[in-house]
Length: 137
Image (cartoon, rainbow, N blue to C red):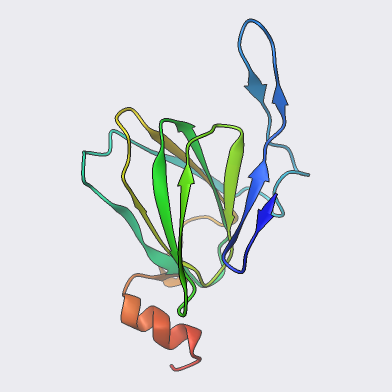
């Protein structure tokens, strides 16, 4: 496990078998009840996803196939994490700006979220995000 103020890399149990590996995410792996699951795929070369932060929602990202970079910003510091293994996920806490980029060909990003979609929970403007982090309304 790798912790930072932004995130936590969490190893997902892997059951190895000569016929292929199996990984399972159960309630004890991530610290929230899963309310929504979605995935990104067929992302064109050079395209970016994300570009937002959440006020309340937690997310757990996994590179099921291929690789991509997750650029994280807490309002003061920026960090890049490359996801490229299907048995390691990235837990992103609330109030963290995220951008996904450098998708390899055929990559698939699985996202497990702690809440259903609510537009009010999203901060989609970086300057608004910085104001939110500094407690400015």
